[in-house]
Image (cartoon, rainbow, N blue to C red):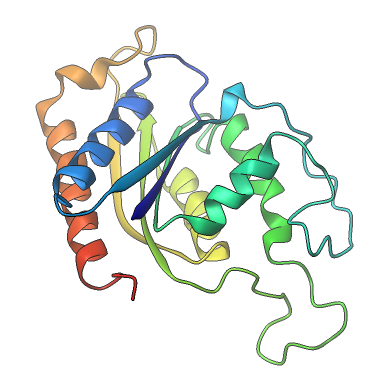
Length: 207
């Protein structure tokens, strides 16, 4: 079974961010006809969780000292075979929801307080490489690099290899879901999903 985790960090119902993620996930499932795909969809805006408090201690064996709505998401993140992450671009960066979530994943690599790891200053609790992709939605003059770098850093932290970045510039910020009318953007999202499905069949196939 392939476990697909899709995390949407848009606060807007019916958002273009969510539509792009859905398009990618559909293409992944279509590209794996002989596999059972279990998709978990996380809408960060619906979760109740504490912002990172920089505790400065290792929470092991838990992923975090705080037991809130992210506890189950950590488990899904640990088990997933493919990760999709989407965010709108606010002030040249990810949304507040995305940043709060990413910050709370900091202790997935806790500092090596016991100096037991020679190669890293942090303990890598997740060691299996998984493929992933991101979807970013901005305005007509949107600049995506700040948001892309933030999510790319998060991907590296949780052992996800970014295999595609889909971007969309919305012509009207007052209307949600406009990407439904953008054939090129939807095609790019579908192409990314097809690519991920191929990688899940080959390069990242579980033994």
